[in-house]
Length: 208
Image (cartoon, rainbow, N blue to C red; front, side, top):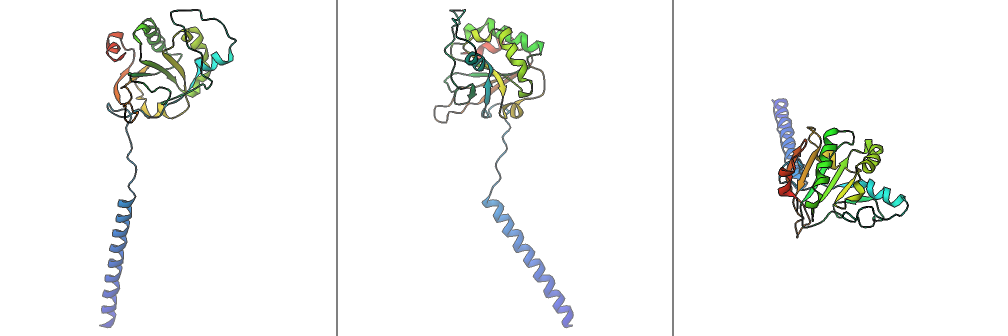
């Protein structure tokens, strides 16, 4: 009789202890909420942190000084640091980020199309971003495409996580269009994503 009673008491104590631990763990989770994972590919998502090594700036800093060969597209002196971040790109205009590969023919065609329409880029900047694993190909691309002549273009390779956060693994190039910086927060929002070659008529409404 006493052994049965003792067994019942032990079982009751075990479940009471288990319930208390469960409640304590639940309360601990409530007090330490997990950070929400942001899907940066969705329209309306904030622009993730971008850190780019600007090949154009790096080449201009290492090259001997010479006069600009185009008065129409005269470029400002290159900054000392070749790195470009969200802070450097702050503005009250939309921003275009083109994820590309220098060996991609569609990317070459898109670049040439944008160059022909650079007069539309009064305030909007174009960031051309490639994977760091093919960085040695970008220098030749910059020279061959005369990127130096266009002050609205930043071109280089990703040294952060921007591409891993935003690339959709569809057609190249991918053009991410972001809103102007919010005056209060400095944050940009994703307006649209173009995959593959985008006609200028579709892009024009986003260029300021």
